Amino acid sequence: MNRILLVEDDASMAKGLAYNLGAEGYDIVVCNDGESGLREARKGGFDLLMLDVMLPGKSGFDILKRVRADGNETPVIMLTARGAEMDKIEGLKLGADDYVTKPFSLGELLARIGTRLRHSAPGIAVDLKSLTAHRGVRESRLTPTEVEILKFLHARTGEAVRREDMLQELWGVQHVSETRTLDNHVARLRRKIELDPKNPTVVLTVPGVGYRLAPGQLELG
Image (cartoon, rainbow, N blue to C red; front, side, top):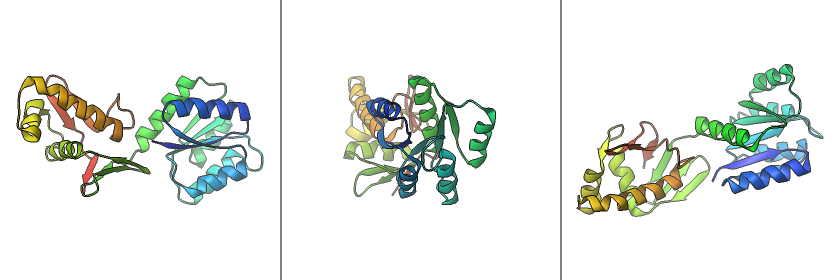
């Protein structure tokens, strides 16, 4: 689950965003002023920061300056009620990754969040002894079968692997009726390791064939 820090002084907006983003599966931490926002941001452990520009205490720009000065490269989306071009330029110069002007639709914000998380997401590291997968601060427990699927694909990274070959390797069967079992295992695996299981970037589907592991996405250890 991706953790997002939302620093927004409008209590009703913060509450609404926290509710809706939580419903989308994000873990949201909310701060209502710049001082507390900076403290939380500097603790680390977030996958994304969303900073309102106009905040009591310290501005969103102040927070952005400090976290970037600390060497923190967590993606940042600036939120503001102002549409002035200079504000956008200032934010981008300071290291913001995106800029959303209020009022905005939830759909637009979700799309921008998804884009930033995909662009910044590190690869998957799988610990074969503990059967866990790590992606940034996110940890997921894997089943032995899910690990075997990843090991099989990893040995053939970039190649289109037939379902029949995977079934033979994993269960010693090739019967077409068993492909649904394999597909179900892959679907559960994707829910654990993909940022967006409906649009996978690690374990890819090869239509009419089977699956392919995207290069550079998986480290086994």
